[in-house]
Amino acid sequence: MKKFLQILLLISLSASLVAKEKDTLVDHLAIASLLIYDGKYDKAKDELLLVDKKADNFDAAKYYTILGVLASKTDDYKNAVSNYTKAIDATKTKVFKAPKIVHKEKYLFSIGSSEKKDTAPEFDAAKVKKEKLEKLYMYLSQSYFKIKEYEKTAKSLDLAGDKGRERASLFALRAECYWKIKQYSNAIDALNIGSNLFPKNTNLLKQKFYYFADLGLYQAAIKNAKLYMDKTNADANEYIILAQLLFEAKQVDEAIKILEIAKAKFPSSAKSKILLGHVYLKKDMPRTTAYMFKHAAYNDTSYLKDAVEMHRRIKDYPHAIFLNSQIPDKVEKLKQKLALHIDRGEFAKVIGLKDALNRYNLLKDDNIRYALAYSYYMSKDYNSAEKNLKKIQDTDLFKKSTIIRANIEKCRNNSMECI
Image (cartoon, rainbow, N blue to C red; front, side):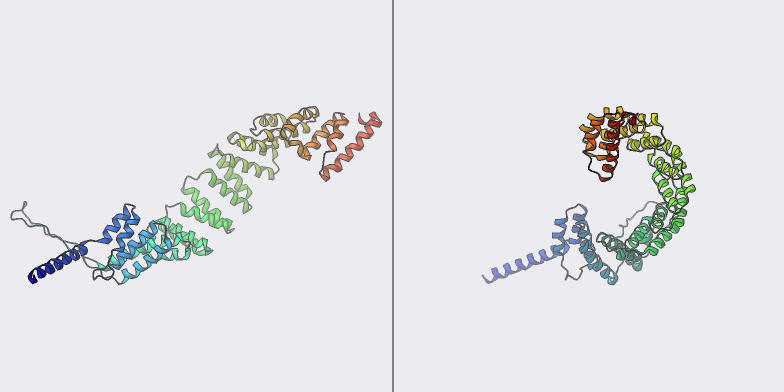
C-alpha cells in the first residue's frame, strides 16, 4: 500500500511538471497578437489575462505594447495612452539581445567548388531599441490625437524621431495640432519644415495659405496660394479662394484676373462666374454682371433668380422673361414675374396673376398685396384697389396706401384728375 501511494505521488508530480512545462511553452503574447490581427479582441483580452507578469521571462515592453494596440483597436484611447507609456518605459530599460542564429545542416558533399559561410549581420542593440521606441511614440501620438491632447500629439511625433518625419502628412498633422491649441507660429514652422523636407508636396503649401488667410496675413496667403497653383492642377474652388483672399487684400484687379482664368479654365464652374459678376457690379458694370449671372445660371439653375433680377435691373426684359420661364421654383418664378410686369407697367397682367398669388398664399405678403392693389388702382378698378389696401398691416405700406386712397377719392370726385 505504501509503495502504491508513492507511485501515485510520483505520477501526480510528473503530471504537474508536464502541465507547468506545457504552460511555459505557450506564448500568450504571440497568440494575443494573432487574435488582435484577426479582429477577435475579446479572445485576445482573455489570452493576455493568462500572461504571468511575475515570470522570469516576462517581456513588459511587448506585453504593454500589445495591450496598447488592443485598447486603440477598441477605441479605448485613454487606456491605449496609458499602456503605450508603460511600454515606452519598459523598452527604455529592456536589454535587447541578438536573436539566435539557426545554422543550416552541413552535408558531406556540397555542390560547387567553394563553400559559402553563413555571415549574419552584426546585431545593433541600440538601433533596435531606437526603432522600437520610435514606433511606440508613433502609436502614442495617434492615441493622443484621438483624445484631443494636441500638444502631446505633436511632442510624441517629435519623440518618434525618424518615423515622425518620414511623411509629409505627419508635418500637416503637427501643424493642425498646434493650430488647434492656438500656437500659430509653431503651426507655420511645422509646415515650413515639412515643405523643406518634401518640396514636391503641395498639400503643405495649401494648408499654409489657409492658415495665413485665417490670420488675416493676406500677402503671405496670396504668395503661398500662387506657389501652390504653380505646382499643382488647382481646381475651380481653389481659384475662387485665392480670388477671395485678393479681395480681402483689396487687390480687386488681381482678383478679377484670377477669376477670368478660372472662368476660362473651368467653363462649367458657376461659382467663379457669380463671384466675377459681383466684382463687376461693385465696379459699376451691371451689364457685365448680368451676362455673368446668366452664364452661371446655365451651369447651375439655383442662380436663375439672380440672373433674372440682374436683367430686370438693366431693363433687359426679354432676357429676364426668358430666364424667369426656366426657374423650377414656382413661387419664386411667380414673384419675379410679378416684379417684371410691374416694372413694365403691365398692370392688367399683374391682375391676371391674382388667382396664382392666392393659390400659393403670396397675398399674405403685404408687399405683394400692395403691388396687386396698385395695379388695380392703375387699371382704374378703384373698388378692388381699396379692398386690397384695407388688408395691409405693414406701417410703411399703410402710409403709402393712404396716399393712393386719397387719389382714388380725387378720381371719383373728378375723373379728369386721373386721366
